Amino acid sequence: MENFFSINTLGWAVVAFFVLGWTYGVLSFSYYATKNNIMIVTWWWLCILAIIFLKLSPFFLWGLMPLAAFLSLFAPGLIGTIILTGSVLLINHFF
Image (cartoon, rainbow, N blue to C red; front, top):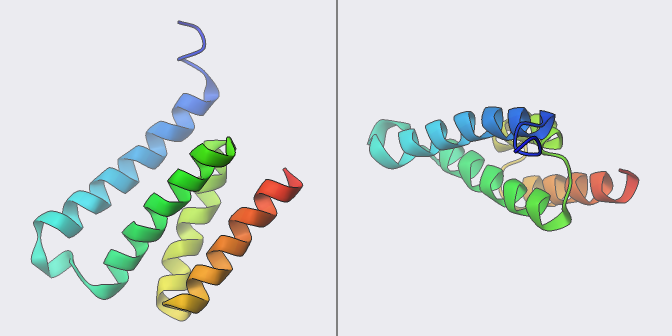
């Protein structure tokens, strides 16, 4: 039971709060379902899958999630996806 209450649990709880809340808003309310919000939520879920698959700390999502929101405004689409993917791969390589 002591493994469940680790510092990573706090990391996942904060991530889940934002991701589930934002996803609920995008799926439930049409005025929140903008192109940028849909892109942000999609990128967040892909980052979560990458973090789980690569067995990295959930605290890296605390940096990747704001990066995804920033990229959806300034580099949407393929360019933002490439930058975000490169960021995940750099984190995987160096940490």
